Image (cartoon, rainbow, N blue to C red; front, side, top):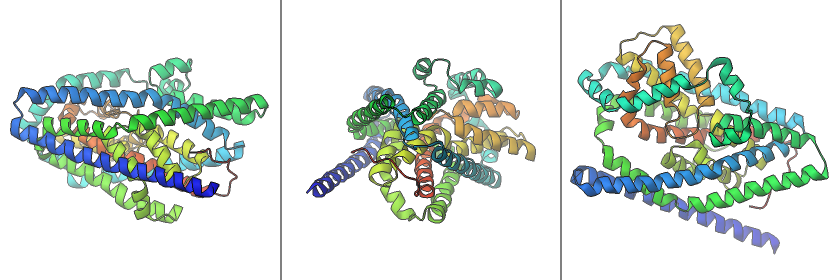
Length: 441
């Protein structure tokens, strides 16, 4: 009878998840259609500006609710994930597999992006007059991005910044890598010290994780409305005009992302995890849709964790570790976008990058994909930094700002799917390691 009750609960959860997916899909399509209708039908009407303003505010509230809960979720998930490894050997195995996977797959991703952009040369065909107008339109925002890139820590300072002097200050300033370092370090301590008190502390941290997941589950019920708002604003403000005007750049980015998503990931899943790619993409579609709508790996983390548990049936201790690390450190889509954008702008400005410079760009993009904040437009300051390093005017980033939101949605989808692929592969590799019992869903 208990087994039947658990099965009934699992079926209800699956039904609720499918209903949410359909509502999100309806919100996506309806928002885009209404937005395009507003753009092409009544774009000059005052109500369109009013609607985009208030709908944008609702979407911002939705994201802020998620970000408010993501830090407690990330910290508790990583602490518990590390503590449940049971011993340092298991943590080393999972950690090393995750690191090797991330470096190799990120390298493949950046190599694909550089190969595609060099072969197709999208930067050579941009109309100079159009480019000047687009750069002028984005001058203010481009200036602030360039300024933030100057303020970013580099070299030894960036390494030092990984270790927070005050974890609460790091949380308040959204320094995700520093917060993750603390959680990883704390989880190791919790794993090494076995006492009644630490077992109680672990129970408390698990409680924080469960509360955060429950609250985020309530917030995500608003996702269909938020997705409608995002897509309405995207369609109403830009229509298809901007995508058409920068179609060569957009096309190359989408081609590179598609090769990684539809060729590289299926090969990895089939060979290293013995998983059907078709089944995998079907089981992870809820996380993909959330990633596309929010353009944030961090905001999608709760959905990815739930998909890993409920749909992919991955061990919690591995999924929590790989997905929380991956939300910041395994961003294939971000690395690919950075590579394409740098070479595109170099082509546009007539800067002929040598092989050594392109290798440098590749290495920085790999590191940028590992260290870029998992928030909307988090890669732009990194791109500005790379542009300045290879002699391309960083202000040129204003050329692509208009299409960045759409491309951010696409590359975030690849980031999140890539994290789930990584979790699937790493879980397969450590399947023989004893696991702690799953917490009740």
